[in-house]
Amino acid sequence: MTADPFFVPVRAGADDMCALLGCSYNWTGSEKDIVPEMVNAFSVAVNNKVDGIGCCIVDPTAFNDVTNRALGRGIPVVAYNAEAPVGKGNNAMSYIGQDLYQAGVAVATRILSHVKKGDLVGGMISVPGSLNEQPRMDGAASVFNQAGIDFIQVAVGATEGPALASIQAWYQGHQNVKFMFSSGGSNGVAVATAIKKLGLAAKGVGGAAFDVGVPVLDLIAQGQLAFTVDQQAYLQGAMTIYQLFLYNITGGLITPVNINTGFKYVDNKNVGDYVNHKDSWEGSSTTPVVLTPPKTIQVSAGTR
Image 1 (cartoon, one colour):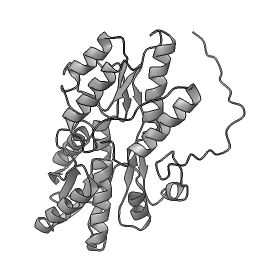
Image 2 (image 1 turned 60 degrees about the vertical axis):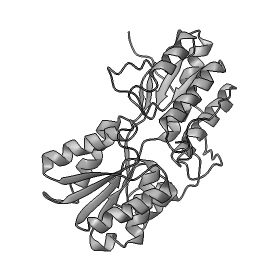
Image 3 (image 1 turned 60 degrees about the horizontal axis):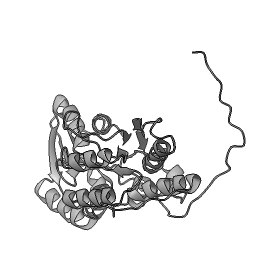
């Protein structure tokens, strides 16, 4: 979804890496997470004979044909932020992003400290089945089911305004909910906003999000949300460009490899590190900020 605030630091990473390496990229896709539009943008890139393609592969099979067509023409393809499950026939050369299923497990495990057996938890997802969010929900569901938590997955849409309206409407019919969380960036902002607008924190309703959009961080600082998760989106943009660049300049000798960009809780203990710095690293600004760079880095060789 090209308009999702998650992609601000993704693009910052891609911008910086292109500046370092002397190359450029085109930013295309779908503003509303519509798979055929994404596949069409991919196909256009293949027809334009680009030197590499990075794609959020959010559907199990929809990108298979265009991926194979690109590879058949010598164009390297890497997946970032979402990848097709093993066995579904997608041949992207690597995946750069978070282990999404395990991220869902980790979020649900932390939520267990806020709820008890029999409590209701609502999980807000943009598009059910989308491979950048559904694995997180599946991971969370595995934890909740084992713990005896009443868990409901709620489809709220991929844009912030409609997602907020959907969450508010869902709450009116489920006022016994004890915790709500999101599986993505735009609906994370919507969860945070809904909790504040409805005054749910004061009623003992907890909330959590994914990604580090400014509204989410501000509401953690205000005590409206318990935590969010940083998947280091900057690295997803930077490493996508870097891997495709290396593949091209080495004639394919250095092949793309999987990179787990990590999982980091952001709560009231460390949220100040985020809200006090307006920069492109985490997406709170489009203006690059560079702290004092290291002058010397030592790398020691081991034995073979």
